[in-house]
Length: 349
Image 1 (cartoon, rainbow, N blue to C red):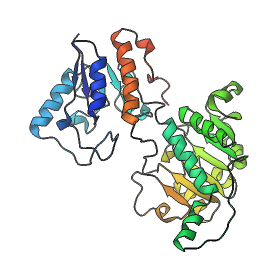
Image 2: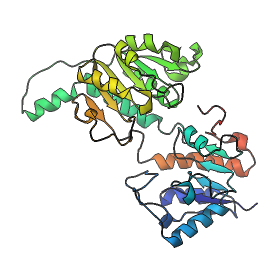
Image 3: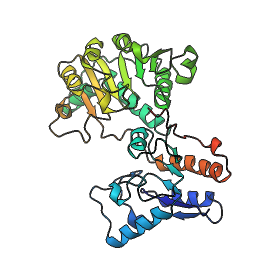
């Protein structure tokens, strides 16, 4: 069978060259930048809003999808324009540029299909862990106080705090949570990880002092000095940080969400930040994205808003290309069992 790889989301030329160098002779790699939206920033996989193709470009887009057997990313846009795999009947494998693609795969009706889906799982772990530690340091070192004093041209000695000895609760300790635990331990924090399948022997894997099940959330938040959400959005995790859970948190706790906004009762979170029960929050995600302009979270002095960008770094595409190139070798050698980051469609939630 003649194989064709079609790049369906923005990708820099160096990465495309690496893909072309990795494929066997006779495999076509189609990269047609004219068919892809201009990017807003490095490693932007969606491009500018409102992008549309001319009639000729749309014809080429459909032709490429029709003969593609492997895709770099799911085609975006409405199904009628090739979103999902509606115009790509020959596709055998999709390399995505995201980690939490379970809802997308389900929405495209691929749960029971033979299409292999490989993800970007793991590449966002370090950037998200670094963002988390930045947020915790901003809180304990009283960054807001320092900026206010600087603005007032005032030199007054003050006392900050330390991360050492504090308890960090990581909810959803996959690769992201494990990396957060690793960096937190470098600051001598005590790390408690909550996971779906807890075992004591996972402590080393997750860089945690204690590993417990998600059913321990109520008790765990009451003992934590900082709470970090690193869990995906699933039926099990939706709304898990409820008003009662927030009420059990320590006064002045730091809260970081690098998971999904749907995990949190945002109204209850806002109220707790307004009255100081939660001392500081760093939010990379929100229930509705973009965060509505009318949200009071924008103007709270103890909130740091990140536009769902904490995971994005300049080296992201190169890291995803590393995964893709490895898997290309396994796929064309007939060793699909050796492919990495393969989505388990039966357990993707």
